[in-house]
Length: 151
Image (tube, rainbow, N blue to C red):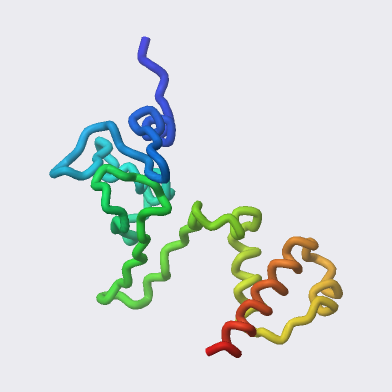
């Protein structure tokens, strides 16, 4: 009987350990960098980038075996040949503020923030938004307004 398959996250967790703020890879390496067979860098697993070929990552850590997601910079590559290809959809697991919202809600939040003139009463009048959604929109609008006045 075959062994039951384990998830990628479990495979990464079993082959790594924590040292201070670093998550150190104990598994195999390829040219001195962490490597997970058939998937490449295990940090891609932790960042949910396994099926995202147009998104690359670059280390910002001095430890070559560190796979801590917060120590990696995510680069969404632009396609220069066919400009009609949409931007890849990817939710950053490191962003705690976006974790509670769906992709559609995040798009609507961005829309209201870009508009910038929405009030709490207008959002409540729509009647279809949760209190958390309204609070997030207002927080981002005020943060954007204060950032623009400082600049």
